[in-house]
Length: 109
Image 1 (tube, helix red, strand yellow):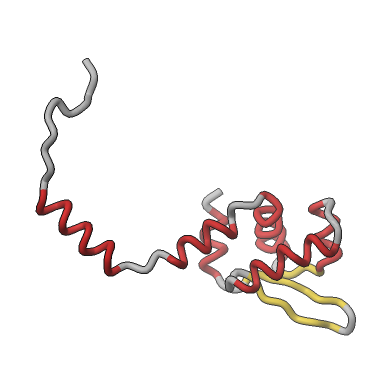
Image 2 (cartoon, rainbow, N blue to C red):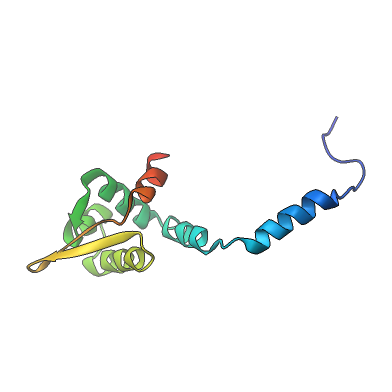
């Protein structure tokens, strides 16, 4: 026997309660997080930075088998959205993850 509703019944109290809570929530950070994890190259960057804490753009490009320009584009995207941070040492730019919350999300996988 299929487990589906045989009648349409809307539980107004529950529905309205959730609708009111949803109206008060800001999901923009969750959407940004989704965008950051929606690209396989960026996932590789997250994993590399979680593993080695800090890496230069050239090393990350080699890991991705991508150009430095493409890798820099991904890193700028992550930095713009608060997921990564950078520091310059002479002519070399190093990237690391911006906060521990990101590490928690990565460690789930």
